[in-house]
Image 1 (cartoon, rainbow, N blue to C red):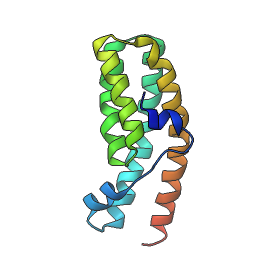
Image 2: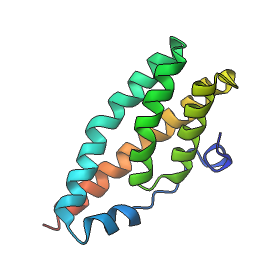
Image 3: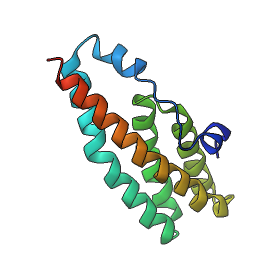
Image 4: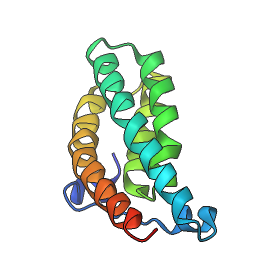
Length: 128
């Protein structure tokens, strides 16, 4: 698991500079992308949690692979790195015992992430 996430699970770094670059100054685009993330990602996390419980490692790797770029897009690099480790461990059937605790840290962090992004979205909506 990413040491940065492990050490800072409650205080992760949220850097929206990539999203801002892609949006090219469009507040509406940023709002749309944050909304999409907030709509889709919690369901992916729930699905991933169930797949880990079921020990369906192939599907765990596939869902982790789907989540990984969305975390990068929202600028949560430490979480993206940890999700990449989950993906690789599940795909390679290695260090499987590390997956549940790594996912728990990510899941706990995601709650705060979703709250922060919802606030950012709300703040952005006030500017248009």
